[in-house]
Length: 193
Image (cartoon, rainbow, N blue to C red):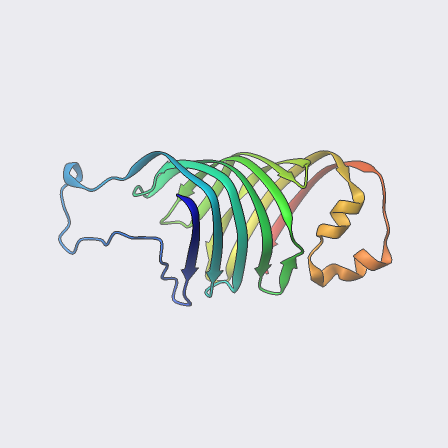
């Protein structure tokens, strides 16, 4: 997909507009079931807007390039992705991250659709040129998106970290001024609200 706008959404009942095939009312034998395995999908210069009314979230980004693959019709599958995007807006509940934010991602997720779990097998992320690795995962629950993540970063700019804090922590941005480079090693556990 090249030079396009992609508008994704999930309504308050959890119905989305990206599952484009319907389940049959007459189950088929295992050997006749439909399978959709993508060896590679490429997005090039695509504007993506995702609105999630169920979780009260919104994401707007410009995808410079994105490659991903996985067997999306399976209940459990491995999703591999490499991306170079500009995150213009991220708002989830009351939290929002100031943009624009340049992201480079190289990650592998283990997806379990029935359990709504997403485990990071490998995660390398660059935020505005700062390198961070992460591990852990997410669970999509009725209460919201629950995260258990570990992260490590080397040579991370303190001023940039303060700039990236969600707006609800704006007092930290005005009360503290920092310069310098640090190494990070931390954990994030809880609901993303």
